[in-house]
Length: 288
Image (cartoon, rainbow, N blue to C red; front, side):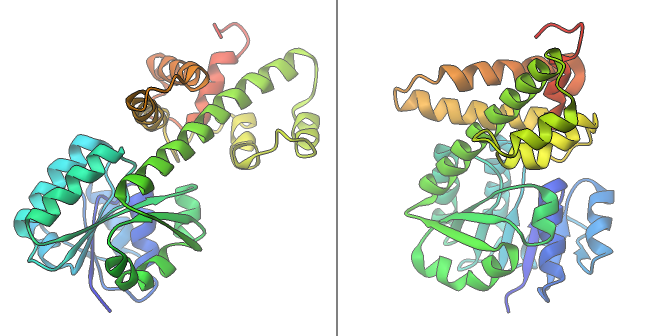
């Protein structure tokens, strides 16, 4: 079994690291946040004392980072430390262009690169109940199959790193636009005098039911803004999806409107709260 290093163990990266270490993988973690590393150590991971130590200890290095710039910067640093023949697996949400640049950096240093985008929430990831959207060389993906089997319940293989990352962006574009629409619909229902309980139950029996209504609507109703996937991250991902669409010459007015609402929510102080906090925009007395 190969050794793993996880660089970036925040909400999603940490959940993945803890899932892997309880599956008998030898996992080393590194993150600037000591508390994030400590949560992984409690599950059995080894805490590296430095970035360089972490990278050199892994046959496979997983990266989970919040921005495309940080992904590229980190991949550059990994490539300078990691011996040839090893593999970098990025589980961040990035755009196809960034994925290709990261793959090129790795290729120039004799390393393999795999884009491995993840679906659902950190809670699902910690249980291995997530889909994986992977792209890379077929032989490298074959070698990583034990890793994928432990990380998630189903792996979808795309032709290349661009396809895997583009799909993830489209998924988040649809999902986060759905969250904004759900918040608007809830506000309209409340204005019509429909109780939250009836709204929830009746919605389940319609074509409007979705993963977001099943998972996030209860948080929305309870005003539970605890961050699982923050407003700022949602805005970042939708923005990357729309950049990808523009590069294809596509107009996306509905998702663009949703992005405006996410940015407005962030501007009102909810950037680090869960994306369901966009519902605050529709609270009584607020501008919608």
